[in-house]
Length: 85
Image (cartoon, rainbow, N blue to C red; front, side):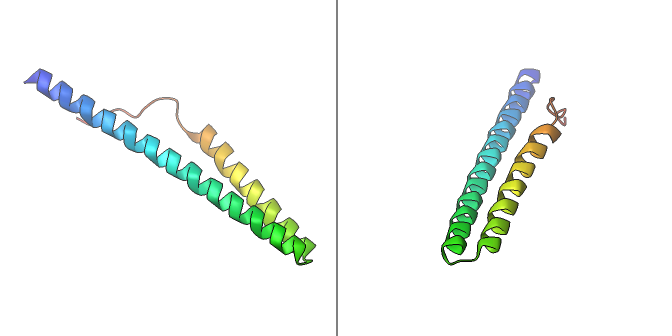
């Protein structure tokens, strides 16, 4: 019975790691999409003659995305949380 419980806990932890990995990948894809769209929008604004808007849109998006990824990387704990019995 103890071996079955241990196997069950390992399966739960494995599934949790897989889900966390999928969530990180999804966040990176969404961040890339946002960055590309903001870059394209700032280029369109620049072509249309609105330089200040292009600079503001492109600059704030880049700074925001970099800040999110840098602070997210430093705020993650090095250890996994203890499993709940």
